[in-house]
Amino acid sequence: MPRASTRQQIIDAGLAELHARGYAACSVEDITRAAGVPKGSFYNHFASKEKFAVEAERRYFQVSGWPASFEEKSAVARLRAGFEALYAGAQDRSFSRGCMWGNLANEVADHSDAIRGELAEGLDAWSAIVTELVAAAQRNREISAVGDPAQLGRFIVNAWEGALTRSRVVRNGQPMDDFFRMVFGLLLA
Amino acid sequence: MPRASTRQQIIDAGLAELHARGYAACSVEDITRAAGVPKGSFYNHFASKEKFAVEAERRYFQVSGWPASFEEKSAVARLRAGFEALYAGAQDRSFSRGCMWGNLANEVADHSDAIRGELAEGLDAWSAIVTELVAAAQRNREISAVGDPAQLGRFIVNAWEGALTRSRVVRNGQPMDDFFRMVFGLLLA
Image (tube, rainbow over all chains, first blue to last red; front, side, top):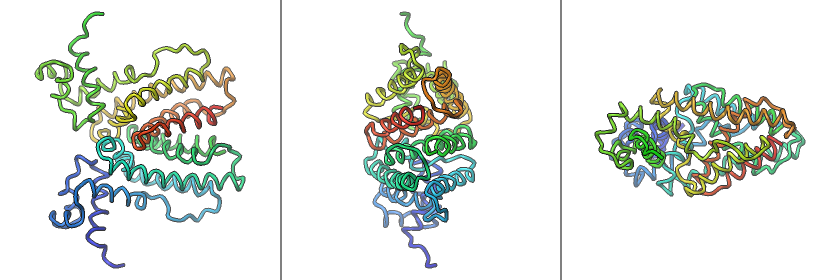
């Protein structure tokens, strides 16, 4: 594999810092130290920490654990596999850190339209993936659940974000267990 | 009405600052300025900003807009009225600020066990209220929905928190509209 470009290196290492520390507490120096590049090189690639954060947000879904492709055949099984992968990631972090998108939404969305706009796009794109799987599950009669797939898609994504936040508070997987039982056991039954 | 104690005055005015600014960005001076009391008096009542935040968290539900009592007769109508009151509050703030509990969960829960512990208690107490209303709706056969009321209660609270975060990103009520349709139209139908 070719060596990642310096820019990509800064995004990937800096994203982990941004996720762990939060926006205000994550300095450009934290980012360049984690990336192993000179501090000055940051500004060759990003005009500001805000611009960097927008790139990190854009990259986040690809490193979130959500599968790029699925082995499962049924749409419901694929949906479940997607959330199970996110659950495994949260468990690996002992339920700390939460979702970087959710963190930025709560910390910065009121103050930066650039960061807020990218969050809206990211969450829309993820909701569209969930919506498509819900619609396929309905089409294939895997589920008898009625309900508009677009509303279900957004609702399920938002419910996951809320569950992840609660798991950070209780430091265990109960909120996600509730999510799986309610979403797959009732809502999409 | 007797004049609120200085301590209560600091909690109520400071809570609004903490909600609007977030934990790190809210200084003791911001709190005392909002409360109209000398900066020094803060430490007569609270050992630290962290201790103040725990008191503010404890107070938050009472000022969140969730009704202390309900005029509605049916349990489902009461539940709906509770979330509608929270929706109205979010609308009044143009969907900014989010939920103070959710903000603290994402900003501080990883770093302060005192703040995290109080969040867990607050969210548990609110979930218990929702659970009781869901259980009453099931008992009274207002809804045919099956499902463990405690799991439903926690899930609904977490889904609300996620919807509120998303509404901060999109700056409109769509995530809450989705919440009402999915929770009252499908999950508790």
